[in-house]
Length: 170
Image (cartoon, rainbow, N blue to C red):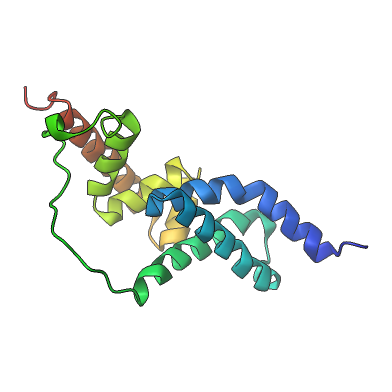
């Protein structure tokens, strides 16, 4: 059985970007199984549109865009039964279990408190490894705006994490 050049190109794409896409999907949804589904759906859509990929250097940004759209599609037609349980209060740590107090969950909870305009660029930089210019292209912003948002995101995150540990109240 002979493998086509299209199949080889796609296989290389999956090998090169599967881990990054999964990590980004996991940060978006917080569920391992759903992150895996999002990653697979992203690659399925990428396979169908592989001819649209003109520059292999832009493959990661292209895949991230597909993944973000797939994640958004999850919520387009879905209606939720909501119960107001309030926001996670990082100062109310006595009621949290030891597993919930792990540093990863504190960072995740703090990141989820950031406004999307700050959270998105930070996730793209930290998890995706994108440069400011790449983030700017991805989000349709100027590079200076992205640098400002990244700076503010880090400051807000630092404040949230410091406040959660009682350091900011001094």
